[in-house]
Length: 277
Image (cartoon, rainbow, N blue to C red; front, side, top):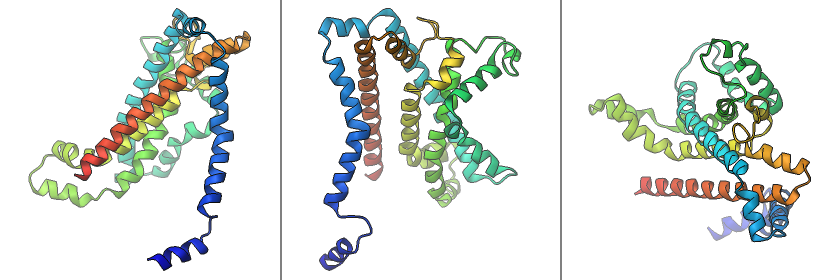
Protein backbone atom coordinates (compact mmCIF):
# COMPACT_ATOMS: atom_id res chain seq x y z
CA UNK A 1 0.00 0.00 0.00
CA UNK A 2 2.77 2.42 0.97
CA UNK A 3 4.75 1.57 -2.19
CA UNK A 4 1.73 2.15 -4.44
CA UNK A 5 1.10 5.55 -2.85
CA UNK A 6 4.74 6.50 -3.28
CA UNK A 7 4.66 5.51 -6.95
CA UNK A 8 1.41 7.39 -7.44
CA UNK A 9 2.91 10.55 -5.98
CA UNK A 10 6.05 10.16 -8.04
CA UNK A 11 4.26 9.57 -11.36
CA UNK A 12 1.19 11.73 -10.76
CA UNK A 13 0.01 13.59 -13.85
CA UNK A 14 -0.86 16.66 -11.80
CA UNK A 15 1.70 18.48 -9.61
CA UNK A 16 2.18 17.57 -5.99
CA UNK A 17 -0.23 18.50 -3.25
CA UNK A 18 1.70 21.56 -2.00
CA UNK A 19 2.04 23.10 -5.46
CA UNK A 20 -1.51 22.24 -6.49
CA UNK A 21 -2.91 23.65 -3.23
CA UNK A 22 -0.88 26.82 -3.72
CA UNK A 23 -2.26 27.34 -7.23
CA UNK A 24 -5.78 26.61 -5.95
CA UNK A 25 -5.58 29.17 -3.14
CA UNK A 26 -3.97 31.75 -5.43
CA UNK A 27 -6.65 31.32 -8.08
CA UNK A 28 -9.51 31.43 -5.57
CA UNK A 29 -8.01 34.50 -3.92
CA UNK A 30 -7.88 36.52 -7.14
CA UNK A 31 -11.23 35.31 -8.48
CA UNK A 32 -13.35 35.03 -5.33
CA UNK A 33 -11.81 36.12 -2.03
CA UNK A 34 -10.28 39.48 -2.99
CA UNK A 35 -13.37 40.84 -4.83
CA UNK A 36 -15.67 39.76 -2.01
CA UNK A 37 -13.30 41.16 0.61
CA UNK A 38 -13.30 44.49 -1.23
CA UNK A 39 -17.07 44.72 -0.82
CA UNK A 40 -16.80 44.08 2.91
CA UNK A 41 -13.92 46.53 3.35
CA UNK A 42 -15.85 49.26 1.54
CA UNK A 43 -18.87 48.61 3.73
CA UNK A 44 -16.80 48.80 6.91
CA UNK A 45 -16.11 52.48 6.16
CA UNK A 46 -19.76 53.19 7.02
CA UNK A 47 -21.02 53.83 10.52
CA UNK A 48 -23.57 51.51 12.06
CA UNK A 49 -26.57 53.86 11.64
CA UNK A 50 -25.55 54.68 8.07
CA UNK A 51 -25.28 50.99 7.20
CA UNK A 52 -28.66 50.21 8.74
CA UNK A 53 -30.25 53.12 6.90
CA UNK A 54 -28.77 51.97 3.59
CA UNK A 55 -29.97 48.36 3.89
CA UNK A 56 -33.36 48.87 5.55
CA UNK A 57 -35.06 51.66 3.64
CA UNK A 58 -38.55 50.84 2.32
CA UNK A 59 -37.31 50.69 -1.25
CA UNK A 60 -34.51 48.28 -0.36
CA UNK A 61 -36.78 46.07 1.75
CA UNK A 62 -39.26 45.86 -1.13
CA UNK A 63 -36.46 44.75 -3.45
CA UNK A 64 -35.42 42.07 -0.91
CA UNK A 65 -38.94 40.70 -0.74
CA UNK A 66 -39.25 40.51 -4.50
CA UNK A 67 -35.77 39.09 -5.13
CA UNK A 68 -35.79 36.43 -2.43
CA UNK A 69 -39.46 35.58 -2.85
CA UNK A 70 -39.34 35.24 -6.63
CA UNK A 71 -36.03 33.36 -6.50
CA UNK A 72 -37.33 30.89 -3.92
CA UNK A 73 -40.59 30.35 -5.81
CA UNK A 74 -38.78 29.89 -9.12
CA UNK A 75 -36.35 27.40 -7.55
CA UNK A 76 -39.25 25.41 -6.08
CA UNK A 77 -41.04 25.30 -9.43
CA UNK A 78 -37.83 24.26 -11.17
CA UNK A 79 -37.27 21.53 -8.58
CA UNK A 80 -40.67 20.06 -9.43
CA UNK A 81 -40.62 20.34 -13.20
CA UNK A 82 -36.86 19.84 -13.44
CA UNK A 83 -37.36 16.43 -11.85
CA UNK A 84 -40.04 15.61 -14.42
CA UNK A 85 -37.88 16.77 -17.33
CA UNK A 86 -34.85 14.85 -16.09
CA UNK A 87 -36.95 11.73 -15.55
CA UNK A 88 -38.36 11.87 -19.09
CA UNK A 89 -34.93 12.45 -20.65
CA UNK A 90 -33.37 9.55 -18.73
CA UNK A 91 -36.12 6.94 -18.72
CA UNK A 92 -37.84 7.29 -22.12
CA UNK A 93 -36.86 7.13 -25.76
CA UNK A 94 -38.75 9.33 -28.20
CA UNK A 95 -38.13 11.29 -31.42
CA UNK A 96 -36.09 14.49 -31.12
CA UNK A 97 -34.91 13.50 -27.66
CA UNK A 98 -31.43 14.88 -28.32
CA UNK A 99 -32.91 18.17 -29.49
CA UNK A 100 -34.97 18.55 -26.32
CA UNK A 101 -31.97 17.57 -24.22
CA UNK A 102 -29.94 20.30 -25.93
CA UNK A 103 -32.72 22.86 -25.39
CA UNK A 104 -32.36 22.38 -21.65
CA UNK A 105 -28.94 24.03 -21.87
CA UNK A 106 -30.27 27.01 -23.86
CA UNK A 107 -30.46 29.32 -20.80
CA UNK A 108 -26.77 28.57 -20.21
CA UNK A 109 -25.71 29.58 -23.72
CA UNK A 110 -28.19 32.38 -24.39
CA UNK A 111 -27.05 35.87 -23.33
CA UNK A 112 -29.22 37.01 -20.46
CA UNK A 113 -30.17 40.25 -22.20
CA UNK A 114 -31.40 38.29 -25.22
CA UNK A 115 -33.43 36.04 -22.93
CA UNK A 116 -34.97 39.05 -21.23
CA UNK A 117 -35.95 40.68 -24.52
CA UNK A 118 -37.41 37.43 -25.84
CA UNK A 119 -39.44 36.80 -22.69
CA UNK A 120 -40.69 40.37 -22.68
CA UNK A 121 -41.82 40.08 -26.29
CA UNK A 122 -43.56 36.76 -25.64
CA UNK A 123 -45.36 37.78 -22.45
CA UNK A 124 -46.23 41.38 -23.31
CA UNK A 125 -49.87 42.35 -23.81
CA UNK A 126 -49.58 41.83 -27.58
CA UNK A 127 -47.09 38.95 -27.43
CA UNK A 128 -47.70 35.39 -28.60
CA UNK A 129 -48.34 34.15 -25.07
CA UNK A 130 -49.27 37.33 -23.24
CA UNK A 131 -52.22 38.18 -25.48
CA UNK A 132 -53.86 34.87 -24.55
CA UNK A 133 -53.51 35.33 -20.80
CA UNK A 134 -56.20 36.99 -18.68
CA UNK A 135 -53.55 38.72 -16.57
CA UNK A 136 -50.45 40.80 -17.23
CA UNK A 137 -47.00 39.23 -17.01
CA UNK A 138 -44.48 41.63 -18.52
CA UNK A 139 -43.54 44.63 -16.39
CA UNK A 140 -44.94 43.03 -13.22
CA UNK A 141 -43.43 40.95 -10.38
CA UNK A 142 -44.82 37.91 -12.17
CA UNK A 143 -42.48 38.69 -15.06
CA UNK A 144 -39.56 38.51 -12.63
CA UNK A 145 -40.72 35.07 -11.55
CA UNK A 146 -40.95 33.90 -15.18
CA UNK A 147 -37.44 35.13 -16.00
CA UNK A 148 -35.91 33.50 -12.90
CA UNK A 149 -37.67 30.24 -13.68
CA UNK A 150 -36.25 30.31 -17.20
CA UNK A 151 -32.63 30.74 -16.13
CA UNK A 152 -32.80 28.21 -13.25
CA UNK A 153 -34.21 25.11 -14.93
CA UNK A 154 -30.90 23.69 -16.31
CA UNK A 155 -29.33 23.58 -12.86
CA UNK A 156 -31.94 21.14 -11.57
CA UNK A 157 -32.10 18.98 -14.69
CA UNK A 158 -28.34 18.60 -15.10
CA UNK A 159 -27.88 17.83 -11.41
CA UNK A 160 -30.54 15.12 -11.38
CA UNK A 161 -29.74 13.39 -14.67
CA UNK A 162 -26.56 11.55 -13.55
CA UNK A 163 -28.28 10.34 -10.38
CA UNK A 164 -31.30 9.04 -12.27
CA UNK A 165 -29.04 7.32 -14.81
CA UNK A 166 -27.22 5.49 -12.00
CA UNK A 167 -30.43 4.54 -10.23
CA UNK A 168 -30.97 0.79 -10.49
CA UNK A 169 -34.35 -0.04 -11.94
CA UNK A 170 -34.16 -3.44 -10.26
CA UNK A 171 -35.05 -1.72 -6.99
CA UNK A 172 -38.25 -0.41 -8.52
CA UNK A 173 -39.06 -3.83 -9.95
CA UNK A 174 -38.47 -5.43 -6.56
CA UNK A 175 -40.77 -2.89 -4.89
CA UNK A 176 -43.48 -3.57 -7.49
CA UNK A 177 -43.06 -7.31 -6.97
CA UNK A 178 -43.60 -6.84 -3.24
CA UNK A 179 -46.88 -5.06 -3.92
CA UNK A 180 -45.84 -1.42 -3.68
CA UNK A 181 -47.86 1.08 -5.67
CA UNK A 182 -46.20 3.55 -8.03
CA UNK A 183 -46.51 6.31 -5.46
CA UNK A 184 -45.02 4.13 -2.72
CA UNK A 185 -42.16 3.14 -5.01
CA UNK A 186 -41.40 6.76 -5.77
CA UNK A 187 -41.66 8.07 -2.21
CA UNK A 188 -39.86 5.18 -0.47
CA UNK A 189 -37.38 3.93 -3.07
CA UNK A 190 -36.62 6.64 -5.61
CA UNK A 191 -37.11 9.93 -3.78
CA UNK A 192 -34.74 9.19 -0.84
CA UNK A 193 -31.95 8.44 -3.34
CA UNK A 194 -32.41 11.57 -5.45
CA UNK A 195 -33.11 13.95 -2.55
CA UNK A 196 -29.48 15.18 -2.13
CA UNK A 197 -29.19 15.87 -5.87
CA UNK A 198 -32.59 17.55 -5.90
CA UNK A 199 -31.59 19.80 -3.02
CA UNK A 200 -28.34 20.62 -4.80
CA UNK A 201 -30.19 21.58 -7.97
CA UNK A 202 -32.63 23.66 -5.94
CA UNK A 203 -29.76 25.45 -4.18
CA UNK A 204 -27.95 26.17 -7.45
CA UNK A 205 -31.12 27.47 -9.10
CA UNK A 206 -31.92 29.61 -6.06
CA UNK A 207 -28.42 31.06 -5.85
CA UNK A 208 -28.36 31.76 -9.58
CA UNK A 209 -31.71 33.54 -9.40
CA UNK A 210 -30.60 35.77 -6.51
CA UNK A 211 -27.91 37.38 -8.62
CA UNK A 212 -29.73 37.44 -11.97
CA UNK A 213 -29.84 40.82 -13.67
CA UNK A 214 -29.80 40.78 -17.47
CA UNK A 215 -32.89 38.70 -18.16
CA UNK A 216 -34.96 40.41 -15.45
CA UNK A 217 -34.55 44.12 -16.08
CA UNK A 218 -36.34 43.95 -19.44
CA UNK A 219 -39.42 42.08 -18.24
CA UNK A 220 -39.69 43.45 -14.69
CA UNK A 221 -40.71 47.02 -15.41
CA UNK A 222 -38.26 48.15 -12.69
CA UNK A 223 -40.79 50.16 -10.71
CA UNK A 224 -39.50 51.07 -7.23
CA UNK A 225 -41.39 49.32 -4.41
CA UNK A 226 -43.18 47.13 -6.99
CA UNK A 227 -40.97 45.31 -9.50
CA UNK A 228 -37.43 46.45 -8.72
CA UNK A 229 -34.97 43.65 -7.92
CA UNK A 230 -32.03 44.07 -5.57
CA UNK A 231 -29.26 43.69 -8.22
CA UNK A 232 -30.85 46.53 -10.20
CA UNK A 233 -30.99 48.66 -7.06
CA UNK A 234 -27.27 48.06 -6.56
CA UNK A 235 -26.56 49.17 -10.13
CA UNK A 236 -28.75 52.25 -9.59
CA UNK A 237 -26.76 53.27 -6.51
CA UNK A 238 -23.50 52.78 -8.39
CA UNK A 239 -24.76 55.06 -11.16
CA UNK A 240 -25.56 57.63 -8.48
CA UNK A 241 -21.98 57.28 -7.13
CA UNK A 242 -23.31 55.89 -3.84
CA UNK A 243 -20.62 53.23 -3.65
CA UNK A 244 -20.94 52.55 0.07
CA UNK A 245 -24.70 52.13 -0.21
CA UNK A 246 -24.28 49.74 -3.12
CA UNK A 247 -21.68 47.63 -1.32
CA UNK A 248 -23.81 47.58 1.85
CA UNK A 249 -26.75 46.06 -0.04
CA UNK A 250 -24.37 43.70 -1.84
CA UNK A 251 -22.97 42.49 1.49
CA UNK A 252 -26.48 41.76 2.78
CA UNK A 253 -27.23 39.75 -0.35
CA UNK A 254 -23.91 37.93 -0.10
CA UNK A 255 -24.33 36.98 3.56
CA UNK A 256 -27.95 35.94 3.03
CA UNK A 257 -27.11 33.75 0.05
CA UNK A 258 -24.19 32.18 1.91
CA UNK A 259 -26.32 31.37 4.95
CA UNK A 260 -29.05 29.84 2.81
CA UNK A 261 -26.57 27.72 0.87
CA UNK A 262 -24.92 26.65 4.11
CA UNK A 263 -28.28 25.56 5.49
CA UNK A 264 -29.10 23.59 2.35
CA UNK A 265 -25.67 21.92 2.36
CA UNK A 266 -26.18 20.96 6.00
CA UNK A 267 -29.54 19.47 5.08
CA UNK A 268 -27.87 17.50 2.29
CA UNK A 269 -25.25 16.14 4.68
CA UNK A 270 -27.96 15.14 7.14
CA UNK A 271 -29.90 13.41 4.38
CA UNK A 272 -26.86 11.44 3.19
CA UNK A 273 -25.96 10.47 6.76
CA UNK A 274 -29.51 9.29 7.37
CA UNK A 275 -29.47 7.22 4.20
CA UNK A 276 -26.18 5.63 5.22
CA UNK A 277 -27.59 4.40 8.51
